[in-house]
Every structure is written in structure tokens, then in C-alpha cells.
Image (cartoon, rainbow over all chains, first blue to last red; front, top):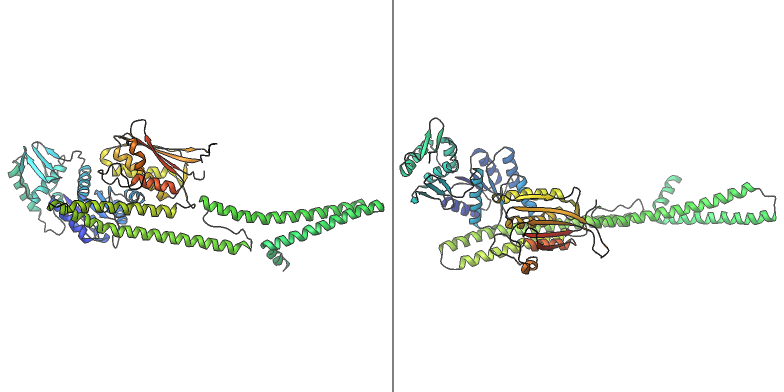
Length: 219
Length: 342
């Protein structure tokens, strides 16, 4: 899962990023509205956390432009200004959720997980596929009840496929959702991760759909 | 030249009164003349009837003109007074001198006082907002550090820090809302249509509480208005609805009705009723929830001072909040606000 955090207070942004990274997310940071807008436009995120009081372009404008460009990425607004007037404005501008500062990181993480789940049409917080379970809250994967040890990239590939298990995911799409922006990308490595996941979870756990991409194998 | 001179006289209250007095005396003089004539006619029957009528008509019309002039001058003074009244009710924003020279400086001064007051309030609000914003980001960082401490160390330090940060946040929220309220909860409240505000808020609640899938029902007549600033109405309704969404099992309803003034000194108003089908609030602590700084459930995240803020805001507008049990078992919150113009 790939996440964008937009927050002009660098320390806050880095703390948030560290917490999300430790739960298996690939995180990009932006410290002003201009960069946020460019990243939202160029990259594919599974969710974004957006502060409203930003330098250069304010958060509400970023939100409106993002929505008018028909970008449907789930966005959680994080703001120090918490009056209902501001919440209504943010939601009407296209935000999906609103958290007022100061916040508890656990709450923000739970809300981001819920946003990603809802965007993918999932209702349960724990994802199940046959004997395989994946819990985004703890970033833990079990197979038939036994915990599996996965690297962070393997976890991201599996989490993305599990979230979108009713369709085929292309190799490019997978690449876009497992790496942070400044990471050297190589779509061949996706094949490597898939190969490793198959070795750990069973050869039929992930299917290759020739010419289209991957999907979870029949449970 | 004469036209301009008469214009100057008419524009001045003093001029009008003088002119009125002049006309009145002239009329009285002519009328007296008429009486004198009558006596003369009685004494000297040779005088013509038509001359008498002419004198009578001229005299009375001059007096009528004097009365009209005075009445119209006073009407303009009255217009300024009702202008002040419409400022109070929020229909008018500024005063108009109605073309009377004596009132113009007064009205100009009052208008610039209003301008000044508006600017000061706006600046104070911006400062309060900036202060809150400036405090909250550092608080967020402290809260994060507290969470890290809690996770990594055995001591109670992290828990205490987190609790204190939460208390500070509530204080900032509460006083910011109060500052906003006392700045706008003046007699100069605007008229807000209730329905669009409720619809916007329900849309927001639907998004913020998306996981719960509550059903919302709005039953508010068109053109139902209250006398209140839009932001404050949003703050009150937002807090009430948010609380309802937090506790409701499946449904939240919001309705409004006008209540007419009755004989028992109850002023007319608009009652907004929000009901949920949740567990409700224990009657023993209902009153305490509306008091500053008390929360019914200290554990529920973000319940903050919501209902206490609502009670405070309503009070500033001369309204009130009551909590009671809803027919379906949940909580029914009734918010009474002064009615807006129809």
C-alpha cells in the first residue's frame, strides 16, 4: 500500500511516515501544497493524508484540484482548525475523512486503513483468502493459522493483491503501489517478489494472467 | 437660487421646523383674519361670500402644509430609529440618514463605529484561530512523542503526557468556539436558512461516519430560518449530529418546527430536534453533560466538550438546549433558537 503524507511541519510528517512505514506502507512526503499537487497528479497512491494549512497552495485548493482532475484517491484531512464549518468545507471539497490536531497516531492509522478498505470495497478489517489471512492493522500474514515471515516489499505486493483480489492487477500498477517515489524502480523485481511469495505461500497462491498481470489464485 | 435655498431648508430638521412654524402662524393669521371678516360681515353685510371662502381655504391649507412638513421630518427621525432596530434583528447592516442634515454626521459616526467593530471582531477571531492553529501542531508532536514513550518505556510518563495534551486540546477547542460565539452572538446575528445547513452537515456526517451506515432523515420545512451566524449554527448542529452519529445504532433524525409565542411569556422560536436510536444518556448525568468541562464518557475519542459548547453558544443567542429520552430509546436533543425573518 502506498501513502502520501502532506504536512508542512516536517517533524510531524516524519513521525507519521515512520509509524506507517513500520506497518508496511510505502510512504511519500510533501511539505507544501505545490509538491503535494504534483505528486497526487503524477503518482498512484492508495490513500493520502493532507494538512490544510500548507505553504504555496492551501490544502482545500489541492483537494479541489485533485477532485476536479477526477482523481479519486481516498484523502484524510488533518487540520488544526477543527470547527464544523471547516469540516463541512473540506468534505464538500472532496475529503473522505477529517481528523483534528492534535491526534492519536493509532486513530489516524485506523482511519487510513478504513479508507483504503472502503475504496477497495472491503468491509472486514482482516483480509481472508482461503487459508491465507492478512491483517493490515498489524501487517501480519498467516497461512492456515501459522504466521508467515515476509519482507516489507513482499508484504506490500500481497496486501495490494488481497485488497483487489476480485480483479487482475497489472505489473505496472503493482509497481506503482509498492514503492515510495524516490525509490529506484524496476518492474522485473515485481516478478521476483511474486516468485518469493509463491515459494512461501504455495505455487498456486498467485496466478499469472498472461499479458494482463496477476491475481490471487483460487482459494 | 431659491430652489437651492429651499432645498437646504428642507434638508435640515431645524429649517423644516422653522418653516412649519412660519406656515402655521401664517395660516393662523389668515384664519383669524377670516373670523375678523365674519364679524365684519355681520356688521357690514355688503362683503362678498366668495372672498370669505377663499380666505378660509388658504388659511387651513397653509396649516395643513405645516403639519405635513413636521410629520415628514419626524418620520425620517423615526426611520433612523427603526434602522437601529433592524441592525439589532440582523436585517440591516448599516444606517441611513434619510437626507436629514442634522442626522447625517451622527449616522456617519455610527456607521464607522460599526465598521470599526466589525474589523476588530474579524481581527480578534483571526488571532484566536491563528493561536489555536499555532498551538495544535506542537501539541500534535508532543502527543506523538507521548505515544512513543508509552510504547517504549515502563514509566507512566507517556500516559500522563497524553492525558494532559488531550486536556489542552479540549481547552483550546472550547475557548476557540467560545471566542467565535461571543464575537458573533451579538444582537447583530444574521438570518440563516436551516435546511441547507442541515443538509450540508448530514452529507458531512455521512462521510465522517461512513463505516457505520446510519440512515439519516431530515424533516425541516422550506424557508425555516433562525437568527444566528451560519458558522455558529453549523458548530451547534455539527456537535449535536456528531454526538448522535457516535451513539446511534442505525438511524439519526433531524427535524425543526416554529413555535409561536404563547401567553405564558414564552418567546417565539425555532426548535430543532435531533434524535438517535442509541443507548441514550443516564438521566442522572444529563444536566452535567451540558456543563462546561464535563463529559459523559471520558473514554470515547473526541467527544470533547461538544454538547457543552452547544449549550454555551445557544445561550449567547438567547436560545437553549435540552436533553431527554427519545421515543425509540436513544437521546433526543432539542435546540431552541430565536426565529429569523420569514
